[in-house]
Structure formats: structure tokens, C-alpha cells
Image (tube, rainbow, N blue to C red; front, side, top):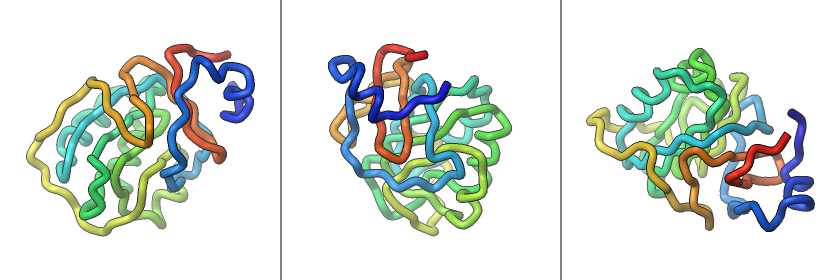
Amino acid sequence: MKYKTSDLCDQYRDELQVANPDFINFGANPAFHGQIATLSVRQDFLLIKQTLAKPGQGRVLVIDGDGFMGCALLGDSLAAMAIKNEWGGAVINGCIRDSSELVGLEIGILALGICPVRPAQVGAGKADIDVTFSGIVFRPGEYLYADQDGVVTSPNLYQ
């Protein structure tokens, strides 16, 4: 499906949440969409790794890292795993690393910034819960649409 977030806003504004323009694009696919899966983690990537190891079925993983900028929650190895397992993309309230490699990977990746530090691997965090950042609530099972103009979510799949 080809779409533009601006067109979705024109046609369905009352059904959408529009995220604040907080994100930087790091993946080779600046436009992506899919059903939302969520994680809430901070300074820990084990739950992210375990989630991306499962079939993505085109879903978008929304990771709430609480906006922490002291470590990266996604790098080239996890992004490659996401591609292999058919995840549609990731939106991260936190940082990525390996930015020069991510730009060549065919996946959508949005994050707040870059940090070279690897996080812990403890397994702390929660999955499949509502997470709130960038001015909206990301709900598991709803749909996320992203492109160069922004990020919107909706309970509806547009075709």
C-alpha cells in the first residue's frame, strides 16, 4: 500500500493521533507501516532482542526507552534480526547505534538520537502495554504509519 501521512491526516484526522516531530530516520525505509507491538524498557535490550527474534509479520515495534540518551536500544545486529524475522520497522523513544550500518538496511527505524554505548542485558521491562511518548499513546494492535512527514497512529488499517 502506498500512502502519505499527510494524506491520511487530510482524510482521517479525527481518527488519528499525530506524534510530535521528535524522531530522526535511521533506516533505509523512511516510509513504513504496520500493526503496533510495544515494549517499555530502560537501559536494557534483552526484551527487545527476544521480541525481534520472533516473527514480526510486518508489525512495527514501538520501544519506550523513557527518552534515555545514555545508551542505544537498537543497533545493526538487532536491526538485521528484525529484517530476517519480517518486522516492518521500529520507533524508539531513545537512541540507536551503528548508524552508518543502519542507513543501508531495508527497514524503517526512527529514534531520538545516537549513542555508542550498549545497554544492559538483564531482561527488565514490559511488553504489550500502552506506552506514551511524543505526545501520543501507542497501543498494541493499533496501526502506525510513518514517512518523512511524520508518525501517525490509528485503530484502523487504511487500504
